[in-house]
Length: 320
Ligand code: 13P
Ligand code: SF4
Image 1 (tube, protein in one colour):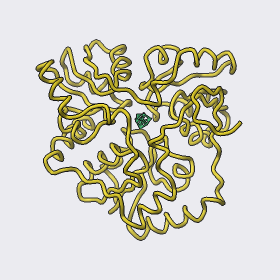
Image 2: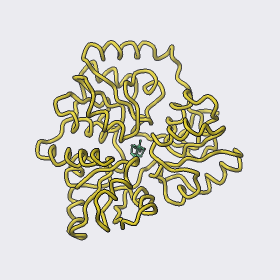
Image 3: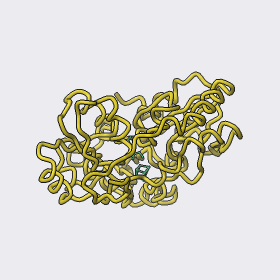
Image 4: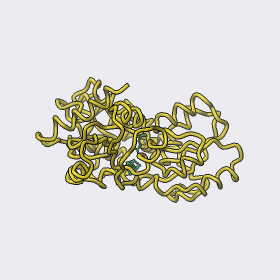
């Protein structure tokens, strides 16, 4: 079967990368990293040739935010989307942070502005605002605290209040609301990748692939999460597969995940019930090479947003 971006396929085959075809770019990137004292942070949704070929640190949004704080480098290349590069810059003001493609956005980050946050605060006075890291620096600056899919419930409960505003992902908000007594006021944003999955697809997967263990990302609608065996951030999915070693698994999330982690779990058959994120796919080896050759595109945070946006991320990182 050909690689496909159609989420309705039963098995999407993500091709393993041809190491010979990319050897030149990988060697050039490694040399450029040494020259500029640069490192590559890569999200779990990155192409396999980036994930396995040039990344120094890989992980979910939470891990990347934590690692960005610790890195010993002059230059950070974010192999991920724009909000991740902004978060890396917030945690590393003295370092040069590059994103290979400025168009690598996110439907969630684009669904809300700081003016929307101000309107929500006016409508629901006194409720703290929890902003998913999938937001712009201006929205983080307007929030009280950030969260990721890996710590959303803990962050919401850490505030010690009966009701919070949680934005912008309506599905993450609904999935967290199902796990906590804290009342959640959502925003109407959605991930353009995860909102397309349906419970019927999971039912079909189980029929076509008997015994399959289904893991769904919490950006999926609650009825999809309800059909799954487990729901968690991309890092929690990786952890689940390495700990439980299921014979057959379907990761209901971005396609590249399965390709990236399959190598480390040869005993598991990955049924790829997935969809590509067009924003994550904009990052390529050639783009990373060009970013390091030209030192672009440098990510900057406006001065007036820096301190409040960083505070929201730091408050999240302090939640255990
Ligand atoms: P996590 O890796 O934090 O689960 O996030 C998924 C995502 O959609 C990032 O864009
Ligand atoms: Fe944004 Fe969804 Fe793509 Fe993640 S997968 S970057 S949430 S559009």
